[in-house]
Amino acid sequence: MAAVAHDPLLRASGSLFGLAYGDAIGKPTEFLTVAEIEHRYGPAGPRDLSGEPALVTDDTQMALAVGWALHEAPSLTPKGVEPLLRRRFLAWAVSPDNNRAPGMTCLRACAELGRGLRWQEATVTASKGCGANMRVTPVGLLDVDLDTLAGLAQLQAGLTHGHPTGLAASELTAYAVFALRGGATLAELPAILTERARTQRRVYREQWLGDLWQRAGVGTAEDFIARGWDECLAVLGRLTAALGQPDDGGDPCRATGEGWVAEEALATALLCAVRHADDPVAALARGATTAGDSDSIAALAGAFVGAAAGMTAWPPGWADRIEYADQLATLGAAWD
Image (cartoon, rainbow, N blue to C red):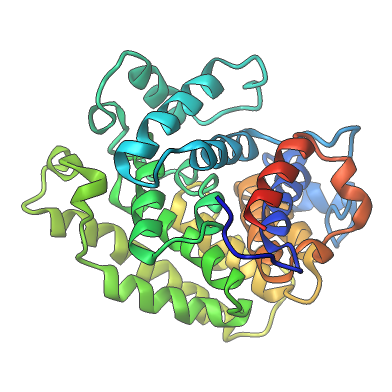
């Protein structure tokens, strides 16, 4: 399913490869302190891929699972997409390559999906971990209306992370990629996302989510989803405040959170991307030089910068050095 007629900047490829590059660069730093990272790589942080190929984590593996499910779906509807997402997630869960410290929420939910439960019963409703949106980039690369984009983003999150903030943050992450690919600038994104969050605050997408809200013990579906949007609005406020101050060069997690949860992964990745819009590799390095979930932060920063600038954002030799290069190239070409 091609997203646009032909994108000369190859923004879909730029976004997918950017996600994988950030993931690979952040992989070795994820559990290090900033001081340890700077001691190992210097004050600028890691700025090159390492390994032949450079290995990624479950972030890229699951983004590819989402990407292939969307690419192969007979229709971009709940009935068309959910079985393929389920199949791809279960294949990932049992793959011998799933040895990159995968998230426990994803593993737990996949185990329940594997038992044949409805996804609304299999999902972990208490989890808003960044596993919900680290993998959502492919949704933002589709040529779809915004209601479909929102539904797809929330559905792919909901299969494992049933918390309303995971759903809302996933929609915003996909919407950010979509807006950047459509010509929005990185600097404009915080305001664009804040407006989106405000307009969607009480929109519960029953067609896509079914009765998920009833598992949360809240009064109404609208109250359920508003909780997620409110948490996203709070962190977007912190992002906007941080960008209004001079960059001190320190750990961006101090402003917008360590990224272990979905809304913080979005905001901290955006902080890195906006701060380094003119130096994409620096955006990855900044995301990797954090005390938080460095691979997820750097991966999303790469997805954002790549969606804005296309493949020219990245050193040309990197495309031959990254794990899963063939899959990234195939999906990128299909959507470019």
